[in-house]
Image (cartoon, rainbow, N blue to C red; front, side, top):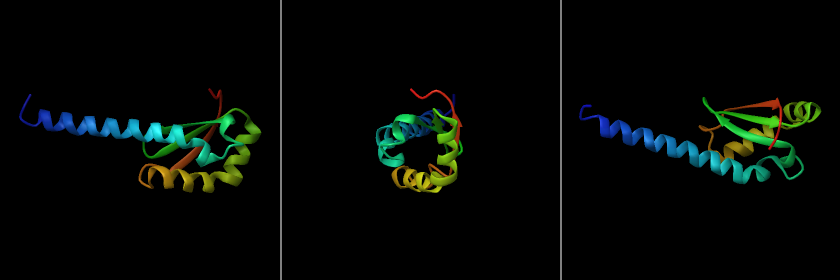
Length: 97
């Protein structure tokens, strides 16, 4: 490897740790972001390209969240994680753990 290998390795480690930290913060503050009523029925997943995917256990609830609450949830997530970390939110129906 060349002289840049340690620098590149350090940068990659910092990026990885930053993503892990944001995911941890998202999980711990999710009830605050989405609300206590919706929290048990949803599960957030931070994806690449600043996209927040929200898994929802019911298709009707997913539609309601998408239509009525998408902007609010997006703004709250941006408030917690930063606008650069969350720029888009999508809702998917699936199993919530």
